[in-house]
Length: 98
Ligand SMILES: [Zn+2]
Figure 1 (cartoon, rainbow, N blue to C red):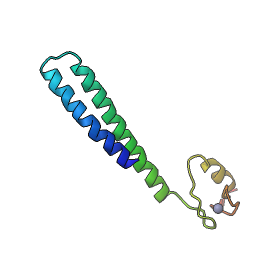
Figure 2 (figure 1 turned 30 degrees about the vertical axis):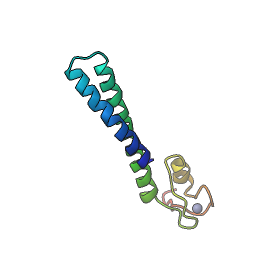
Figure 3 (figure 1 turned 135 degrees about the vertical axis):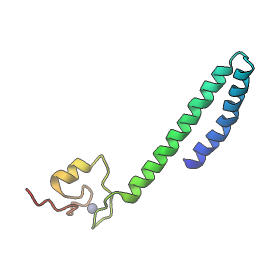
Figure 4 (figure 1 turned 90 degrees about the vertical axis):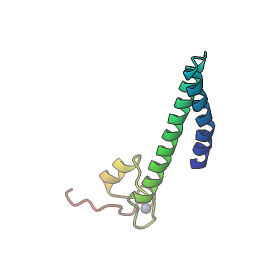
């Protein structure tokens, strides 16, 4: 996904620069090029950010001590209520104040 977003960014950068060139010369459709280029560049930055966030979640998320599956935002409430791993049903966290 990172290589994909870099490729899209390298395509949109000339489009953006051409849009800047056209708006400087007051040509028609200059701002359209500018807006499309800027929107696609922001989209690439968003993809890159999501890629980084996903990688950091996989790297730093708490892991089950017996099967090694990570705790995600989807199954966090289930883990915090029962204290058990949703995959292997072993003890994920120890809940003391029951
Ligand atoms: Zn487990």
